[in-house]
Amino acid sequence: MTMRSMNDIPFQSGRRAVITGTGGLGYEAARALCRAGAQVILAGRNAAKGADAVGRIRAAMPGVRIAFEHLDLASLDSVGDFAARLGAAWGTLDLLINNAGVMVPPRRQQTADGFELQWGVNYLGHFALTAHLLPLLRTGRNPRVISLSSIAARNGTIDFDDLNAARSYRPMPAYSQSKLACLMFALELQRRSEAAGWGITSMAAHPGVSRTNLLHNGPGRRSPSGMARTYLWFLFQPAERGALPMLYAATAPEATGGGYYGPGRMSELRGFPAPARIPPQAEDRGTAARLWEVSQVLARVRFA
Figure 1 (cartoon, rainbow, N blue to C red):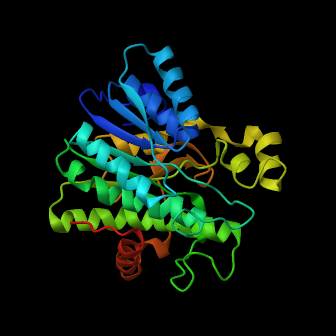
Figure 2 (figure 1 turned 180 degrees about the horizontal axis):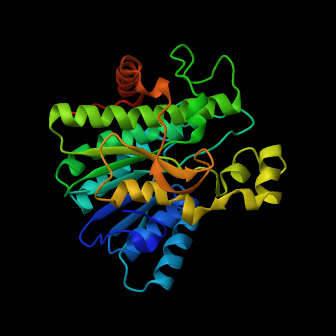
């Protein structure tokens, strides 16, 4: 199928979905899945922002089933608490979209557990969340896990000697590493699901270059990238279009496990969903296996 708008999403009635991140791509994905009939939990750390997002969706589509739940991906305790609450409330899960993220803060920041912020939020928090939710996903109906990567992953490397950028922090290399890790996690999760018979389909997606607030919230509005986002807005595709690749991965019948999807034009910067190019370093199975084991130790979780 060709997905050119939210209207092309297959009917999702009866499916339960969790989406991390209450603004930008997360908001657009929640809006689209609600319109298609899914029951959605929009999870984020800012309660006011989450309530506003849920309120706008309900106002536009009365009767949809959506709720906000607190989840701070910068705290492993918060991740565990969220998973416990979800298990008690739902008991099963059909779709997990690991979307939330931070981008290139100019100064090194740390999570509550002492991890560099981009590594901790973009990757490790989602790794832990998926592990905690694995029992719910295994009981889901055709369960899928979608991990959001970025074209920045092309320049990423996994620096096992300094995963937390403690010795040398440079904003973009740290971001690229976190997004490469997200992509490698999606591919490794698919391989392990197939080997262990978990029945979970794992895919990755990226939004190209989209008009979200990541650059304003990260490096800031007055940074060079923030100024480009403000004054060259026409170069960035709308957030609704940027969300389509992950919605394609989440709902399209022909989207395949281990797939990677992004915009199909201008070197994947914009356009409608299409298979994306996987960087060679993301296909290194030895590095992926080592990253998985290290991440289980750091995140204090086991996939079992």
